[in-house]
Image (tube, rainbow, N blue to C red; front, side, top):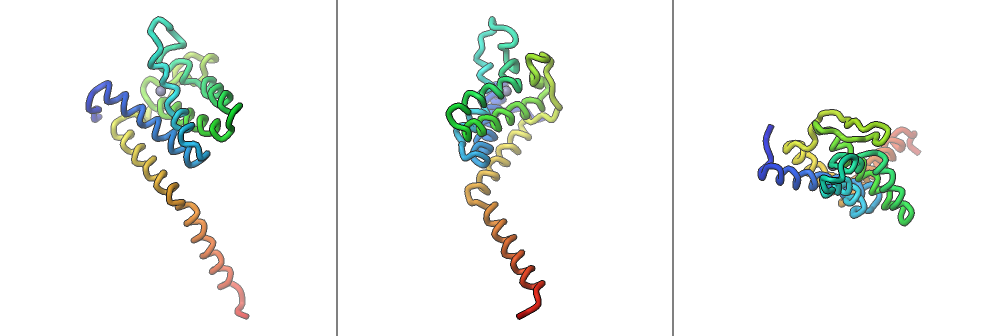
Length: 170
Ligand SMILES: [Zn+2]
C-alpha cells in the first residue's frame, strides 16, 4: 500500500480533507448548506484534541464517533435551522461511514456497546482518498452546472417525441 507523504501528519491532513470534502459536497447537493455539511463532516475529530487524562469514552474514535453523538449534533442544530441540521447529519454520517472502513473502526453503538465496529475497505488509504476527492469534485461540478436538470429536460424531450410518434398523425 502506498504511504502518505509526510507520514502521520500527511495522513491526518488527508483524512480531514476527505471528511471536509464529502461533508461539503453532501451539504451542498442535498441541503444547500455547504458550511453545515463541512462542519458535520469534520466535527467528530475534535476528539483528537481531548487530553489523554480524559480517558474513555473521551478518546479518539470514542464517543464522538457514535450514532448517539451524531444524533445530538443534529438535534442541537435542528433547533435553529432544519436544512443545516440535515447537512450536519449527512456530513456526520459520512464521517462515521468512512472511519468505519479503517482497521480501527468506530464505536457506533456507544454506550450500548463499547466495541469498535466496521468493514475493512480502507477509505482513508492514499488511493481511496484521491478517488474520494475526485468524486466529490465531479459531483460538485455536475451540481454547479445543474446537470440533473439538463438530463431531466432531455428525457422529457425524448418522452414527448416518443408519445407524439406513437400517436396517429392528424
Ligand atoms: Zn474520525
